Length: 89
Image 1: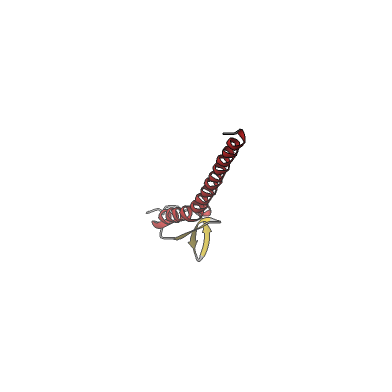
Image 2: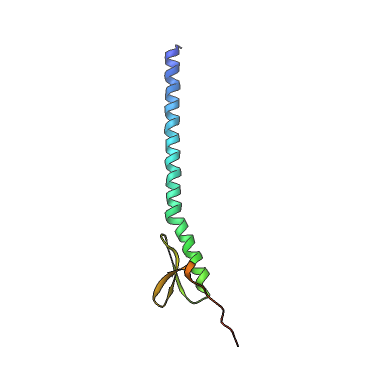
């Protein structure tokens, strides 16, 4: 076997490995996009609704602004809402 044919075979292996490496990068990127667009919003919506369920307010989750609560017909970000317990005097 000559050294020229040996180096050609090594080049094929390297090229094949690079293709698999590119495939794995693309698959990883697709998994991150799937998680960010499907899984995370679904989990966040459930958490948002569960957190405000007891209060009687309607809640929704938006990917851009987070959890919002409907008060007097307006949607207010969760961070701006404070609920104080009523005194039972």
